[in-house]
Amino acid sequence: MQQARLNRGDEESRIDWGIIFCVLLLALIGLASIFVAAYHDRQQVSIARQVITQLVWYLIGTVMIVVIMQFDAEQLWKLAPMAYWVGIFLMYAILVFYSRSYFASTGAKSWFAIGPFTFQPSEIMKPAYILMMGRVITTHNNEVGTHTVNSDWRLIGKMFLWLLPILVSLHFQNDFGTALVFFAIFAGMVLVSGVTWRIIVPAAIILAVVGSTALLLVTSDGGRTILEHLGFQAYQFNRVDTWLHPNADTSNQGYQLWQSIKAVGSGAIFGTGFNNSHVYVPVRESDMIFSVIGENFGFFGGILLILLYFLLIYLMIRVTFDTKNEFYAYISTGVIMMILFHVFENIGMNIGLLPLTGIPLPFISAGGSSLIGNMIGVGMVMSMRYHHHSYMFSNKKDFQ
Image (cartoon, rainbow, N blue to C red; front, top):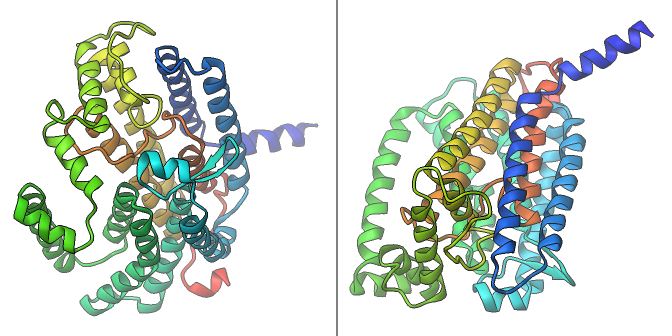
């Protein structure tokens, strides 16, 4: 009996309750925000249905965390290629079997739809890609031993080759926003992979120059002609126009962004109070969910939400340092970059600082695909502490 209690205590000590607490708080904020959004929706959709549906997704995500936690580093290592190729298969299958109704409303071929059930494979591809990149980086570093400029360029090339099939699929899906998420994950994992600063600094300068040039091109008629020849679509230009001039744009996106800015602004410092919304924002339960938080709880509520995200990130970083496992470190970096970019982009676009890209707010926005992808990421990080006895490996054969 005493031994059984000791075993239970040991297992509980291996669970990071701080991460669970943060995710639980975000889930409660999400449910409350979805309730407010549904309550004030002019389409008179069922409030109970939206809230219960999201609650079911949270429960499924919780099961995913529990399941993923059971996988130790060796099992995740072996799972990585399978997860990646299954994800690639789904990413290309969507180009044929995409939802025609979603394509008509969004212009993106990103969703499967079977009756009322919808699924976005790119969201599940994110943790699969993170796993595969962790394996690629670890294998490369163990093979080369000492980093050199040539070996680092080979590593970057390998990482990009695994990213390329995803980017090609997203190009044909017309999903530029999700492509940016994968680029953010790629960049974050390159930074922690040991690549020399003699490569990173010039690359950052080149990226800044390219970004500035792209902004100049997209804001001029001649530049847009050039970008059109390079494959840019009209909807991408419309999003830039909406971002720069939301009050002058007559499209649905322009109206949505302008209403979101008004809603967040009307919240002032402490907000209008829970479920006391006066500004209508179309389809606010998904990508524009931060407008609900900004209006109801104001600047103070928005800052508390951002601090909660940073607490979650801090706890993930602490677990990584505690485990001292190279493969886990790369996985954690990918998950952290995925969550950080989502938070940065979603809040930025809700307040007009960044263009609309269709990026959901992690653990809060309505929708199952994104939530499950984030929950899988949390499960991978939590498996680090759960398998605290996992050893630090020194070469590839340890995981064969």
